[in-house]
Length: 167
Picture 1 (cartoon, rainbow, N blue to C red):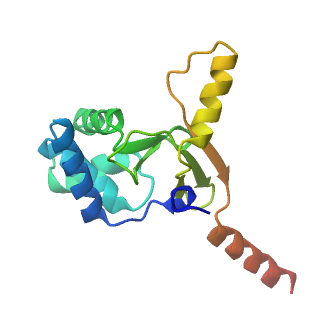
Picture 2 (picture 1 turned 30 degrees about the vertical axis):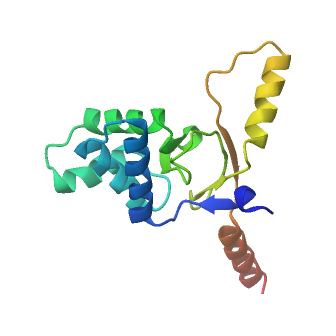
């Protein structure tokens, strides 16, 4: 398994991630406002998928009058520039492990603990989908591949519980 095809769970160094996004914004001449940065910090600190209203509740702990549009506008900007990903099937957002480059990646999502793993596959899956769409005359506008199941930790825990119950 190459380094690029290794799945990444969304538990990375929040400070390093923020620095990478700030650098990407400087290089692309994008404006990372304080509210965008704060939402990004909250998402990075969350350590996994977070719903917009979870982020709003966290923001309200800092700013009591924070409103949904503040969160949604920040998420929209961060999505548009590839700094975060949206997991449609669980209506949540996760940080991107490669904020310096725009890319489409598949995710493995655990149905039990909701952790998400970003599969960095050098674009192979995205390219395959794009080729098949083109072959069929289909013009894709967005692409998200989410694979649901049980992560190794939850699967192992379920197996242990089943073994105990069988005794």
